[in-house]
Length: 295
Image: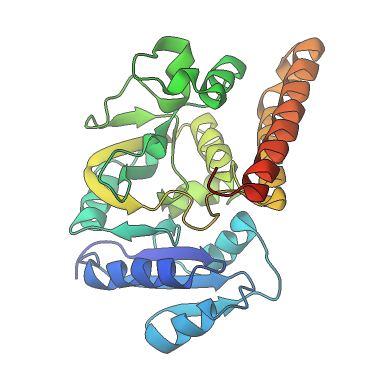
């Protein structure tokens, strides 16, 4: 084995089948350098942790007493290692041949890159547009969540959330990559801090990329490496009320932390009201979907 080592941090919660596939892909497609894998199980209580202990004895396992959320649990795994690179990996992802070596070689050769991410594809082979993103603006977020920014012909400020300046097959610097697969330089984490544990779930990936950008680090999208992402594999087709709240609270926290201090108070009130309205509409729509499945 050659090159600087890699610590992999995976947070699991009631995802036995997905996690088995993820860990199997790591076993089948390891990098050609030292590798350490650490799973933090967020009190699944459904056999997920037991599966890891039974089938993957090479994996370090921490059983949390409660559901710590993504940021806190990932930070726990990060602190347990000391390799120069850290891979924050969701259990609903699968590695492909050569992906880790390609990204690690990129990081070795480009010391200005603090974090990079691969091309993410869905199970049907289609591109996951969340693989590369721009930092959200009020207009970009509105267009994205209403669907206007996701249309094929959408461009400019309407489509900015998906970083349209880069094609899916074009490598380059972006504002952010997806938290499902973030290869991070440990020195960059030590410079800006680990994931912000004020986010229980969602938006902590954007927050980290934002802090890295402000500190002068580059975030890089590299489509020559590919990983499979089972979209909503761990959250399910309909988010629970707790996850829905966490998603919208993450939007609020990100805006309040990074944008509100420099914006007009009236604009801030409008943004907060928009987030609250979207939360209410999403909770209502999800309740209808749960009450009327299949319709």
